[in-house]
Image: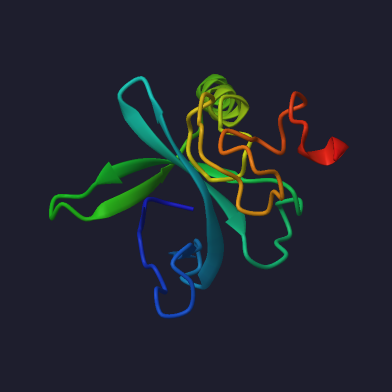
Length: 135
């Protein structure tokens, strides 16, 4: 795929991104993540439908750039070393993410897990130190 303008189908799903393939056909992807690496932004997209060249659990990584009008563009990354580095940065981001499921990226998050029955306001159900499952 060449550099592609972003076309979000917000009425259906805010995380759905539509790109045009080399033949001009629309291809839908789910926005999996956006990563800042060495001053550049990279977007991770997962196909919304089965694709011939992409496995079900794979993602496609594009560099996020701007065109002359200031519109977002997705630029394919051909450098395998850069792809590995960006993916490693994504893995670090996921590893440091909050485990309570709130969606924040703070490994020291002290929010309360709403599904927990524990009365301790500092409880993290995903934390092995939690006593709420021992009641």
